[in-house]
Length: 281
Ligand SMILES: [Zn+2]
Image (tube, rainbow, N blue to C red; front, side):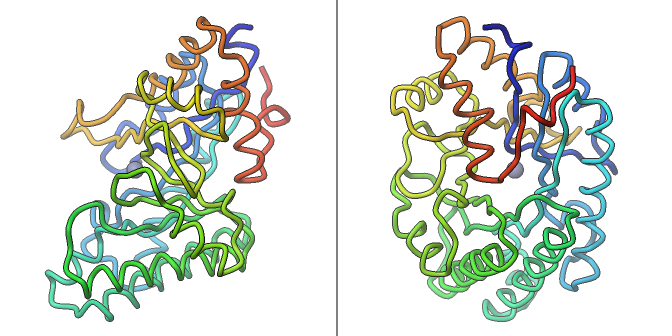
C-alpha cells in the first residue's frame, strides 16, 4: 500500500488567515499526500483584543470557518473547522481582573457559540479542556466546570470535543465526566497526546516514538501536528508536512492497519466523517 491509496488526516492544526500562511500551509500538507484537515481556531486572544462577548467569539470562529473552506479547495479531501475556547483564556481573564466564576461564564458563552456553529452545520466539532500548567484551586475548579459544560453542549448537538489538557496518561475520570453528561468517550479526543492514554481517544502528536507506542497498543487513535501557523514562531511545532511523512513511514514499516485506524476508522467513530467518500483524487 502506498500513501496515495489512503486518506491522510491531520486531526489538529491551526490556520491563521490574518497573520499566518493559511492556504499555503494546506497546500504544503497536500503536496506530501495529506488529504483531510481538522482546522482549530487559534486562541481568541491571538486574533482579537479581548474575547469576552459572544460577538467576539463569532469573529474568531468565522475566520476559522473561512480558513477551512479555503483549505478544502486545495485538498483532494476536505477540511473541517473545530471551534472552541482555549483553556488558557481563563488565566488571561483572571489577570484582566475577572473572578474565576466570571471567567468561567465568559468561556462557557464561547462554547455555546461553538455549539451553535456545529448545530448549524458550519463546524464539525468543539474544543475545550483545562490548563496544562499549575493553577490555583478556584481556577482549576472553574476550568473543570467549563470543560464539563463543553461535554454537555457537545452531547446536545451530537458532536465530538477535542480537549487541550495537562500531560499524562490517565484521563479515565475526565472520560467519566463526559459520559455522565451523555457524551460517549469515543467523542472525547485528547489533543497533543502521547501514544498511551486511558479514557478519551488519543490524538497522537506525530512523533515516531509516540506513534510506535500507539501502533503497539492497537487502540483507536488519530494523528496531529498542532501546527500553529505563526510566522513569529516558525520552529515551535511540527510543520504541516509531518503527518503525511509519518504515514509514509508507517506504511514502509508495514503498519497498514494502524494507518487505516488513524485515518479512516477513528475519524468515522469519533466525528462521523467518511474520509474515503470525501476523497477525490
Ligand atoms: Zn492547537
